[in-house]
Amino acid sequence: MEAPPLERKLAAILAADVEGYSRLMHANEESTLATLTSHRTIVDDLLARGNGRICGTAGDSVLAEFASVADAVTCAVAIQQALHKANAGLPEGERMDFRIGINVGDVMVKDGDIFGDGVNVAARLEALAEPGGICVTRGVRDHLRDRGGFDFEDLGEQAVKNIPRTVRAFRVLFDPNASVELAPNVTPVETDEAARDGPPAAAGSASADPETIELAFWQSVEASGDAAEYQAYLDRYPQGTFAALAQARVMSPPAQRESAPESQAVELAFWDTVKESDDPKMFEAYLAKFPEGEFASLAEIKLQLLRITSDTDG
Image (cartoon, rainbow, N blue to C red; front, side, top):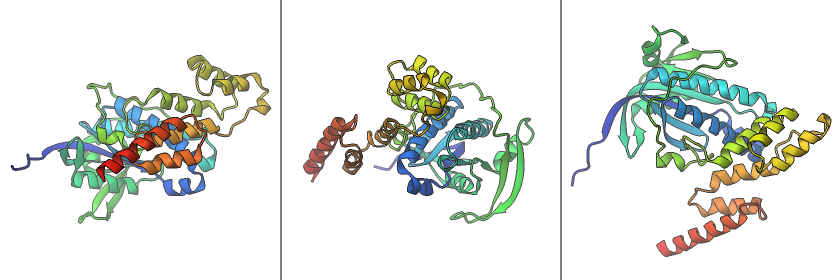
């Protein structure tokens, strides 16, 4: 039988990854995983609300498609503005910046994933972007140049890896301290199975699971030293994972309020990166790090099942 033809379509492609991710992991794996979990919750939520569809994730990277070029650029700006605010509450050495590239072009679609030259160009543009910035092709700029609200800086022709022609690139100019308004979400956004396979936040889900949302909320207030913000957490999660700690900080003098990430937050972030994995080594790593952890029994069960499956397949 002949293979069915691949679907082709025109799309705006958004590629994003973390600048200096390897450096951050080398400096502090636990803190980096916790920050990545929190930041990805923000990114995934904005992609869903901005009419995007996550097509794939791999570690610190995200690939999404949009039917509208305007939606793609607006969503990218919203992401960078939200992450800029999230980073403001972190120590300088733990801040995490994403770079975003956007291209518009023809893509091939198979099992929900997108492929082709259009995707490759978006990925190369992302590498050209500054930390916290957005880089787009001339095609994207031309779609938006006569519409209000978008400003661009011409970066000229760029030679990029594995693309035989030069690419005319433009930097999107925006105020990182402002808040752009997203277009109404006109269609339900479905997340592909492939997007759920990657880390961190059960990764790539358009709506993060409750544990991840709670973790993101806590990480947004834990370093503030503001009793009102800890009380806001308690109001929303009176029986939450960090309720006892939040209550203690509400009652303690300001000078005694701790600001370092807590071990519970780190463990939860670590578990979120491995819980959907089919690799026994991921659960072995969790158990080595947290032998008495909250999810240790689940990790042992999952590890045993994976080993049985491996023996059966062998």
